[in-house]
Length: 92
Image 1 (tube, rainbow, N blue to C red):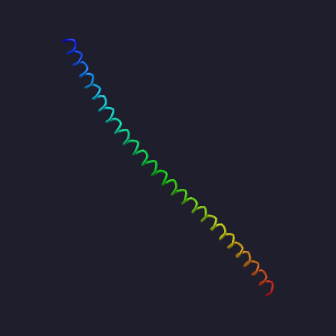
Image 2 (cartoon, rainbow, N blue to C red):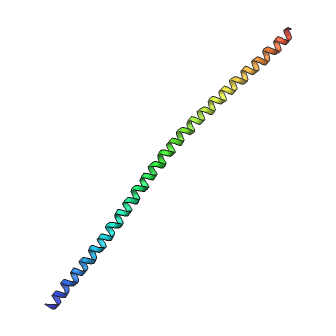
Image 3 (cartoon, rainbow, N blue to C red):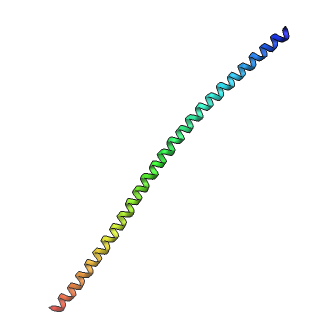
């Protein structure tokens, strides 16, 4: 009977250690899940920022293209004015 009581006590002690280990693992899992969720949130924020910056870059490229077209048109106007002035000075 003493051996059986010792075995039962040893089994209870092992169960207690297993419960403690399970509680530690559960707590660690909760921490890691929180870290994962935070990392996902940060990743989503970074993706949103990347998309916003990509849109701004596209808009900036469009502005550059429009400015280049405006400059070309202005240069054509200046050229036409210069030619008109040259013709006018020849008429006088």
